[in-house]
Image 1 (cartoon, rainbow, N blue to C red):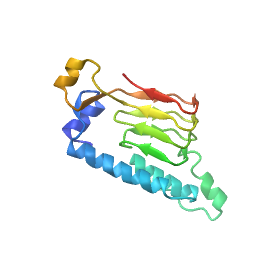
Image 2: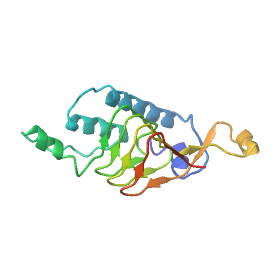
Image 3: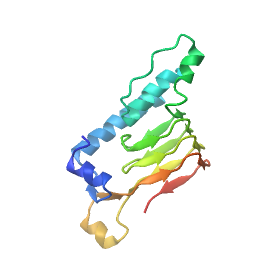
Image 4: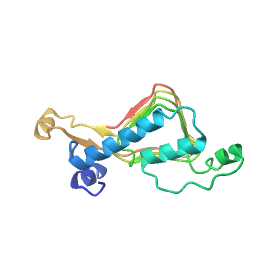
Length: 170
């Protein structure tokens, strides 16, 4: 999936065809993973991390279960962010989030380019991160029907983003 010509163009910040079969398959995978994450209800931190890792394509094995539920929850403090549902992520595979980061509810991420969030960063509710952009010149839009272009978005360690914030490129 991530080796298709259009995927590579997308990652490289070039114009690409958004309706490529591989890109659409990954978007469907990520949409289904977000749905499972959002509909999980009150689950353990372990289960929440497992669902989160499915969204972002993180295949690291989970640590062995600790007998004490509180200690088991603490196993993830140094490896994974805290994420409150609901969230919506476009591809997942291009979204990197540092340990100890808090992503509040109603997060929208269009990670058509690499979006990196540093460690111990705090997000308010309703934050949107847009990696996608379209040609701004009308002539380019005519020549590049339904194509998009991307740029990287990096938020450093220990940032704070207020509620109802949108950040986009272009």
